Image (cartoon, rainbow, N blue to C red):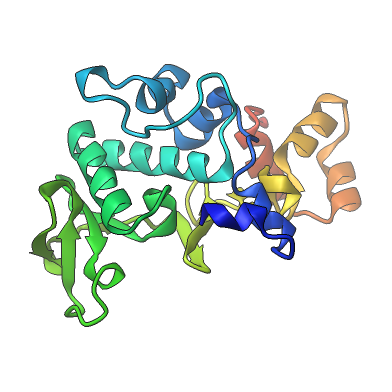
Length: 229
C-alpha cells in the first residue's frame, strides 16, 4: 500500500492515510489508553522490542498508525497479552507483505489470541477457518470467537471508518472527512468544543450546524465537556 502515496492520480484522502496528523496524546485519548502506553507500544516494548515497530520518535501518527494503536488497545482491553499481539502482527506483516496489517485486514479475538480470517491468506479456505496469528499460523475455528472489532467499518480493504466510542455514539474518525479529525455529522468535535467555550448555546450551535442536541452533547463529551443534566 505504501506505493499509493507516490501515485499522482490517487484520491487525496488516500495520501492522507500516511501523513503525520495525530499526536501521541490524541491517539491515546481516542483509543482509551495513556500516552506513555502508546509510546511504549511504538518505540520501546522491553527486550522483545516495540509491538508497532518502525515508527519515528516524536513524529505524529498517521491515520494508519492511529488505527494500529486502536487495534492494540482493543486487543489489550480484551485480555490478549502484548507478546501475542506482537507475534500476530509480525506474522501477518510477513505473510501478507503488509506494513500496516492491523489496519488492512479484519481481525478477531476470543480473548487469548489475535486471529485473522484465513480467507485473507488462502482463496479456497473453508469459510469458518481462522489463523491464529501469534501461533505461527496454527488453525483454529470461528466458533470460539467471542467478539469482532465492531468499532471499525471496512471499505477498499481498509479500516476506513472508526466509531471511536462505539456504534451507538455518533463520534467517528474517517480520513476522508475533515482530514481525519473526530467528527459528529461531519463537523469536527473541536469546532463544537470551541464554540461552546466561546459562550454559544446549544440551540445556537444546532441552528448554525444542523446537528441534533444529542449529537452536540456527544461531541462535547468527546472534547471533555460534560453538559449539566
